[in-house]
Amino acid sequence: MRYLFFLVPLVLAGCVEAPAPPPPPDAAQPGQAPTPAVSTTFPSNFTVTLRRDHGMWAYRACSLEISLYPKTSRASFTCDAVEGENVRSTREMTDDEVTDLRRLAEAADLYGGDHIGEDNTPGDGAFETLRIRPVGGGRAVVLVTSENRSFVDDGARRELLRLLDGIGAEMSRSAGLGGAR
Image (cartoon, rainbow, N blue to C red; front, side, top):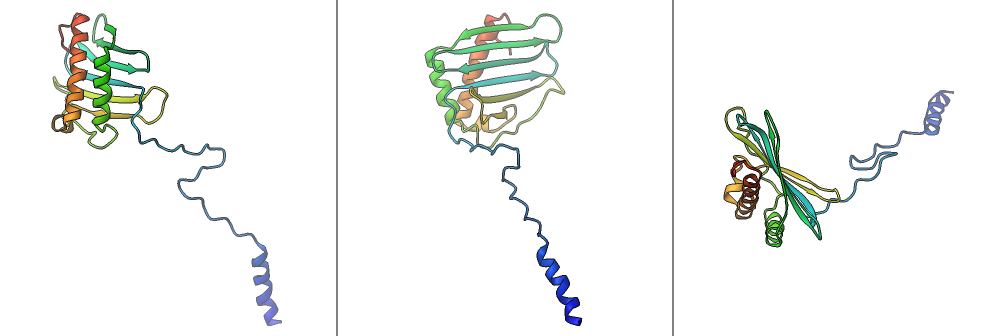
């Protein structure tokens, strides 16, 4: 009889289903699509946006946005006024600009590290960011370029920023701002 008291709980314990172990952290949850594999190649068609927010200037922010497509590439420049009219300018990119932009953007390793800079807008400074987005969606990156040493020390990043600044200054002049951005 003594053995029966021991065996009955043991037999009953064997009939109860044990809970399944939890899934690994990266496993898809029920009703959730699996996470797509991350591409490690630089997108061939992308939009690059260089935005400069200003601390104390007549314009809150100015942006240069360039979209590179297979058959056409376009640049647009916009400054958002604190008071009054916003400033806008658009134009087609030249073949040389498109070639240089693609080459420098890929060489600059923008998806790598060194994405931190400084925000100087509380005073009379600027806060500048560079954003890359694939045209069809996918892996995007945003880097702070203001006070970021990698845009001074790294040749490809420095040249990419110079190219974008040059296009932005030219478009600023055509918009009537005299090259300021």
